[in-house]
Length: 232
Image (cartoon, rainbow, N blue to C red):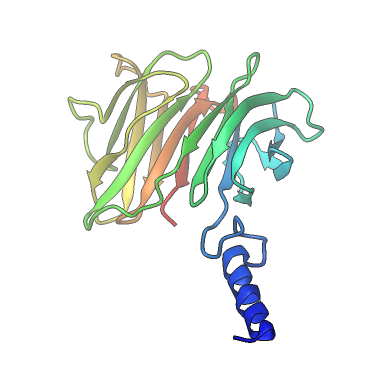
């Protein structure tokens, strides 16, 4: 094998291993982590969030989730503040792995907190949807959450029991409803007299979603819910 041919083989191998940057970790078909961020901080009309030095978004309206940002894999801080990056909250030194998507959730006022979720972007089986719930309502008690058809009465057993503030449930597989319309009702743990949230969610068959309940002073009950999709 002559020297020029050897150099060509080595150069080709180098290209296969290291690709051409941007969306990968240096290995072709091994994408870097993707991170998005939800601004659920009352009083912060628009938030800026970063993962390490990479800006996820400079304008995340309250009650919404940003698009994904790509960041190299490794350990780094997840940080959020207002648009001038004041009022900072930081979740320090977290590992972001290849082939993985993450959602950061900032909530609270006096003590702003960041909760990071690792997503499951796999579809569920035929005839089902996958739902997990998060309680991001600072200062609230644990919550019972019910997922039913839109016209169904409140069942005797909650879908998610006593979900504490700052925690996420496991995924629950729910039978698909023909209209793809589900009713979310949220109550203080053990008290079904007054719904804190009563909202219709649209979820497609085999979709996997997270429902985040958060404090919202703009609502009569003081609470709201954000639906985010995971299987893309």
